[in-house]
Length: 473
Image 1 (cartoon, rainbow, N blue to C red):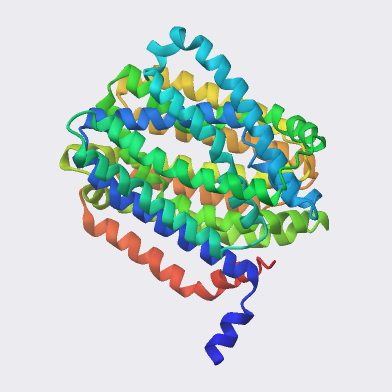
Image 2: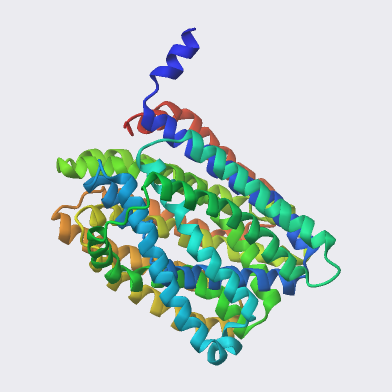
């Protein structure tokens, strides 16, 4: 009974953070479990094509769905607490209107861009259908996160993460040819069925009532952000498209494996930031910036430790998730992980900027960083190969972080975070990113570094747990 009482008294914010973290761990774990299967069932060329397809889906998705489930949706949850059902459905219909318009234009110009995009018309149509229904699941998940309701989100995230790759694997095994198409259609159609269910759910909850008054605010908020979202995605994924065009699909496959491994650290951050957003908004209402920094700094420290851990274990993880052909990908992991660390700076500073409803200011920083990344990629990938893309991305994420911080300070008129500490932490991650390539052949050194990290985390475990407890509902 004592244990039950303790569990019952845990703050909702802590339960939510723990559940989202576990869901992220499990879903990412499923992704890592299936990655070795896909790298063995598909040739490197086919695996590279799947990665390129996913990149185009994400890129077109920004334009087709307008990213309405991001910052603007959280603001809607804050501004219309008694109209959340109507707001969600209205945003869903707005997303559909934008999707239809975008795909009408895309189909019209398809004959001109098809050689450059490298996808046949059936994949374009599949994208269009996915973009019509996918926002329903995104809106539902965003609302669940904002309201710190974790049980159903946890369940559905696990179900979709399991079934989509499972069906894709069965389709590949049953296909007599065209394994690439079996992989894509098997996984996507499975997700589509779930999305349709959530679409109907949101429609019924919203009573099929569209409030167009919400559209104007959402469009005005997100329109200046579209270049930002596009640039953010290009900053993280233009590497794959350029490697495919400048090197080969096989090189894209190697880089994609490295990127998949590197993103494991984001599990921790995504789980923490899901609860950090409403916490930050509530503290910003009171202009209580010291509390925001007090919570964010330890979380960022744990994330930095996770980044170092991923870098140190790169050889073992790549050996697990892929065949020996992919081993050279380990040398792309350190700079990619370094870039991932600076990528989360955007969340820290962006949470403050979005609260103040000044989204257009982050666009300039992201466009500058993405443009610089494309330029550096074009120069260095051609000269040094696909591994150079990791280092160019690290540099560009650092530039973006500096610009985003300048914007945040201008808007909040305060430093908000302990920037000296962030500076020292950043230098440590950069140093590890550059030094690690020279110690990959020495397992002893890497394991010692990992042992130190684990020991420090255990020593400060009570403080770390206390930080998450402060993320109360």
